[in-house]
Image (tube, rainbow, N blue to C red; front, side, top):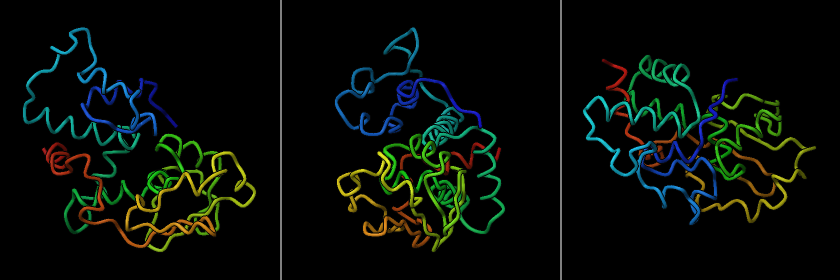
Length: 209
């Protein structure tokens, strides 16, 4: 599986917003975006140019790809899947992205970032409906249950879940049972439960040209 080797902080600076690619570090005072809130490049703060309509659409697409850590071909596949379904294409595409296994692990708090969540999944730490899944992009459905592999419950990643997981921050479409360490998909995210960090309408416009 290919992966981007570009510096994570550079991606945030390019988009001009925090993408939370480094987990807790992004929320603290050491965040690079706080010190250098301008695009990377030799021109420094003066390097930002006025964007065209196409440029705005492109930036939203790039932002969404970087947030979820996926490449162009896979991201385009999400658009193709969404456009074949009945309903709002942008919302359906957001739902497909939100219900990826790596995103759910991150949203619940089992992983500090989506990148860490992907690594934990590929190492075989989780079961979906009792079966081991090692594919970060695995598409979850309503009523699916994610559990920690029994022999890995004492791993360093899960040593202090009660402090690590903030149940108030878990989206309403997800439920985490601390006693059984089980995550359940209650329903598809809708409205304000969707990812509001990018504009799906601009992405649909980009691909529909």
